[in-house]
Length: 193
Image (tube, rainbow, N blue to C red; front, side, top):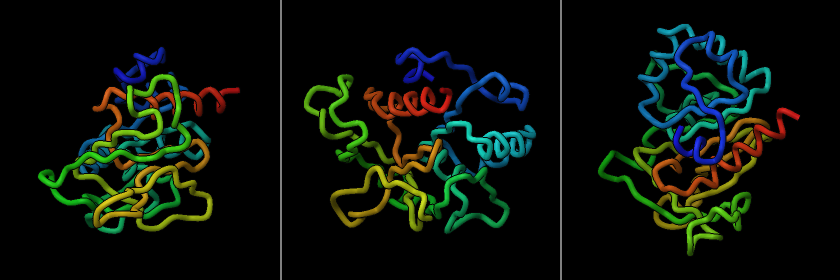
C-alpha cells in the first residue's frame, strides 16, 4: 500500500466482497499462499475475485500473489486452490526455504531507465526473493519480463505479464524501488481508457 500511495494511487484494503466494487485494480501481495487461499474462501472472496479477474480487472501478484494468480501449481497441497487467470504452472518455494532467500539484480526492459530508478540501478532492478516461486510452464499468451541471470536457477522465469495480469516471484515493495508498481499503475491507466 505504501509503494502505491507514494506513487499517487488512492489505496484501500480489500477484505470483503463488497469492497471489490470500489477498486479499479488489485494487488495480491506476498505471504503464505495456502493461508491466503483459505482466507479468500472463508471470506467468500474467491468467486467475486475470479469474476473480476476474468472480466479484465488489472491485478498484480508478487510472490504468493503470483501463486494465487496461477492456473496451476506444480506442488500444491491437495486442498489448495488458486484464483487463476495466468496460464502458468508455478512451483512454490522453488528457490528453497527462508534461509535460502537472496537478492539479485535483474534486467527488466519494461522498467529500465524510468526516472524513479535508484542511483546506479537505471538498467537493473534489485529483486528480493523470499521463499519465492518460479514459473515452470507457460501458455502462449504469457510475456516473460525477467529471468534469473546467475547461479543454479539461471534462466528461471520470475516476472511475467498476460494481458492485465502482472506477476513477480520477488518482493519489489521491500526495496524502495517503486518502478514495478509504477509499471502496474500504467497498466491500470491503460485498462481504464
